[in-house]
Structure formats: structure tokens, C-alpha cells
Image (tube, rainbow, N blue to C red; front, side, top):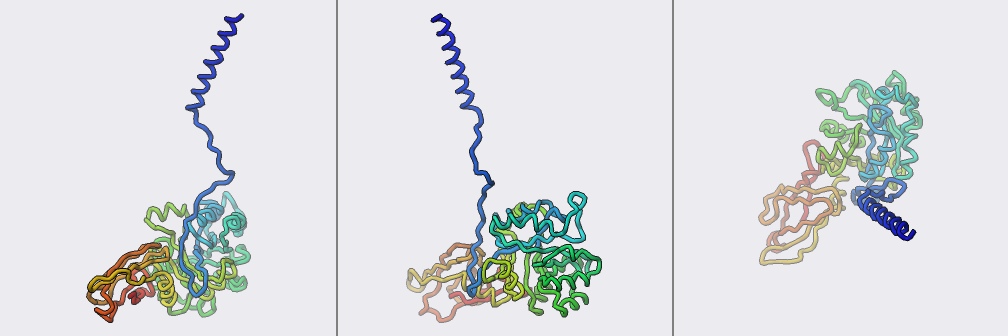
Length: 372
């Protein structure tokens, strides 16, 4: 009996040893949170005149028109990529996935609404009117019911936009055409108060003629991604730090404040390291972003100073003057400082004018400033 007990004990010990060895090599499940967690890419832009700079994209698509993602994914992308406000603007007339979900034009907004609240994203209700040029494509924003725009008569659609007090945005006016033109129907819409803004930048391109229209007709400047696929793939491939966006200077982070700011024209756009906007706004953006420190060390005729960019938008300066001793070019990445040397003030009383190469205020002109 003792021998049998001894043998059983040996088998038991052997089995435990083998089990321990198996457990040592077996993949173990990692306990994770119940919800998927990720990080947000923050975009620091200073306030201007006390207004909050909200990062916005007013032109994105989902599977409810010709996009390839579900509406909640658009909200998750927006949060991860540092946005504050989005508008899902699925096409009314072009719905290639209609056989899979033939639902109301309001459905993509409804599906994304709860996710937007969880992610603290302001979700604007919108839709895209899709017609050949002229008149072209238009986003209708801050609408109440997208289904009421689904009718063949374009001018009746615009009448409904007026009835719903929508913000009317003319999308990508140069897309799919040989030239960017202001047609008679656009003049009619403009005179009747039915064009409030123009999408000067769209996805990967911008339209110089459209920027002139914005400036000359005092319209609101808009830049959007018009994304159909996955956003980070599109812009990582094109080496963009951030996706294109409209910066709306709002009183606070609310739909009503975004709406008020857009109708007031308090916007500029950011894309591929460049900003574009009306001169007064971009000058204030620069003045609130860039500071020049006091000289911290002097030699016989030189002073050493730090120039700091408090914004995540880079600054690229090129001198338009030929004043000896000043740097001809200064590049300041977002959120960084650079060290420069300049003549001591008792050496020269003048300072150069710099062009901010990536601050566009017209098709032919960039912001000009005196830095020192």
C-alpha cells in the first residue's frame, strides 16, 4: 500500500510539474478596461479677442452615402484627432449603399449623436446637396430635417434651406472642372442670402479664385477634409501632422456659439502646416502665438534672444528687408522656441519686415510683420 501511495504521489508531482511548465508558456489574457481606450492628439491654438478656437470639420461622409465607415467611427476619429466639432454631411442624391440601409437621411446623425455626447464632440446636423456644375455641391448645416431637402428642384431645396435657417456652404467650387468659376446661379444665390460660406480648401487642394470670392464678398472661409475613407490613412500617407480643419472662433464650445461665429465669419483654416484667413484674424493669431524674449546675452555688437511659438501651428518667416545682422529666415515649429542673434539696438535703429510664408491672406499675399 505504501508503495502504491508513493507511486501515486510521484505521478501527482509529475503532473503538477508538467502543468506548471504548460502555464509558463501558455499565452495569458490581459485584463483590459471594458471600453476601448485611446489618446487624443491635442492642438494648441491661442484664444483671439477672448474667443475659443474650436477645431472643426464640416464635411465628412459615412456609409449612409458614399463613405466607408459607420457614423460612430467618425466621432471616434474626430476625438482622437483633436477636433471639437464635426458635421456629418452625407449626400442626398448619391447613396451607393442604399440597398443595405434604405433609411432616413437623418439616420447617420441619429446614430452618431450619443457617441458625440460621450466624446464631448459638438455634432452639427447637416447634409450635402449633390448636383452637376453649375450649381455644384452644397453642404447645408444646422438643419432640422434632412429628408425635406430630397427633391429634384434645386431652388426649392434652397428655399427649404432658408426655411430651416441653414448655413449654406458651397463645396469645393473647383473640383471636377477645368476652371473655378462664379456662375449666374451663384450670383442669384448670393444676392438672395443663400451662400454664406465657401469651402476654399477640400481634402488635398485649395482654390485661389474661391479665396478671392470669400474676401471680396465677405463670406465665411471654410476648409474641410471631405473624408470618405479612414482619416488617418489619408493624411498619414500625405505626411500631414493634422487633418485639414476650420478654426471657428466661438464664445464657447456649443452648437449655438459655433453657429453664431460662422455666420459672423470668425473663421480661418489650417491645412498641411499652413493657415489661411482674413488679414486681421491672422495678424491677431500671430501676435498671440509668437513672442520674442528679452536679450539674455550680449557680445560687442550682437544680442541673443529666444523666439517662442506658443501655438501648435508652425511659423515660417522670410525677411523682405536687407538689414545687416538680422536672420534672413526663421522657422519655428509648433510649440517650440528657437535661438537667434540680432544686432544690438544701439547698432541699428531699424528692423526687417518678415513675410510669414505659411500665413496666406490672399492668393498672392502672405502676412507681413515686424518681429524685432
